[in-house]
Length: 235
Image (cartoon, rainbow, N blue to C red; front, side, top):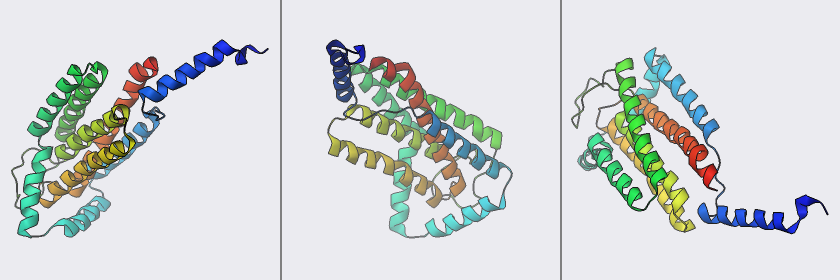
C-alpha cells in the first residue's frame, strides 16, 4: 500500500486539521503580505500625488469637503465629541489596556503584535508628517489641532488600532455571529473618525484617505509578520 495512504499518516493529518479548526475558529488563515504590498503601493502613489500637489488631489478634496461640511449644531456636537476617540492619548490608553489584557490572558504574541504595530505605525506617521510638511486647512478649526496635516494621525491611529481588533476578533472569537458583528463595528470606527477630521476642518480628505491607507498597510504587513513568526509555527 502507498505510504501516503497508511493509517498513521491519515490520523496525523486528521489531528492537524482538527487542531487548526479549533485554534482558528474554523477559518483558513492566509498570509497578507501581497495585500499589504498592494496597499503600500497605493499609499506611496497617494502620498506622491499630495507631495507634488497634483490637480486631482485639489479636486478630490474640494468635492468631499462640499459633501461633508455643514453648520448643523447637532452634527457639530457629535463630530467634536466623536473625534476624541482617535486622539493619540485615547488610543495610547486603549492600546495599553489591550496589551495588559492580552498579557493577563497569556496571549503574549498577540500582545506584542498589538503594541508593536501601534508604535511602528504612529512613529512612521510622525516621520512622514515632518517629511511632507503639509499645512492644515486655513479655515476655522472646530477642535484643537496642531502639527502638520498629511497623513491624518487620527486616521492612521484608528485604522491601525481597530484593524488590530479585527485581527484579534478573527483569531480569538469563536462565535460566528458575534465575530461578524464585531468586525463590522471595528470597521466603522475609523470611517467615522476620519469623517470627523474633515467635518471639523482640521484635515483635508486626502489626509484622511492617506491615513487609512497607511494604517491598513501596517495592519496587513504586521499580520504577515505574525503569521510567519507565530501562527505558522503554532498550527
